[in-house]
Length: 361
Image (cartoon, rainbow, N blue to C red; front, side):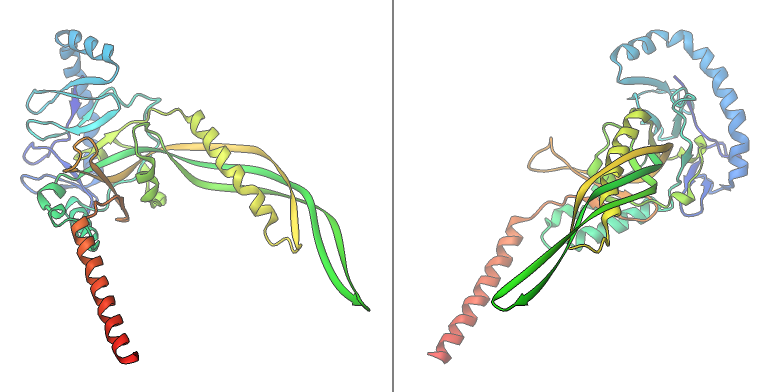
């Protein structure tokens, strides 16, 4: 399998998508290209890649057959240096490990795997590193050696596949509401309870319900950095992936639809019974899905895997929204810092009690 690298029209080096300028930039000569320049050149590059791929097919048939038998690894050849690189089956954009050229893997985004939209990064790696360092240093009980910038510089920009779903659901609540009033007659307190039949119906539209489309994605991290500015998403083009990592979906749309339907159905009864005006209102809700549609979108995420000195098999994972800068992740706790702080509080509290007891007694 071959890969496509978008080339600088000035010096022939590779181009990366630049989040700050929203254009494509050559890291060597500094040339900047607009979307029309890169997209116009993309068709010719893909045609050249297809011709090159035909030449590779014969010599690499044996390797590709072997990779298919594993079901999890794929071999591609870098067009810049000719090296062979192995990637996961779901990877669609990466870097060459040898010459570091950004590569969009051909053949991975077949028609059924091609996203509808892509939301480009707007936060650069430098901005992401600074934001992470600021966020981490604001935490009081994190180990000091956790702030090694050499480790934070290993942060990667990844486009993760998501389904963005819009759906319409009908709901009907049927139940009983009660109201009570109390009066006093002589020695008696009389309570009257009135029972009412309650029927409410409604049609509710849910928009932008998001679900990861990749099985190995960490759902907690993914949900923790929402929302994304989906209105800024663009029609998908391979060129937006240049300079970043990207994954393709491996979860089918029908599974996501069942999950979304189950979730939104749980919102219907609270919505239909809100502000009912009764002292109590009990009953059941029937729901019916009228329409559901999903878009397959690649969303930008800065990802950092930080080594855990106590357990190398359990690293710390962090994710940052590539547009808003929202961060989610679990930080380690320095027990020595926590103990010193607790001891200081205990000493101060003891001293205050001693002084108070001296004057009071």
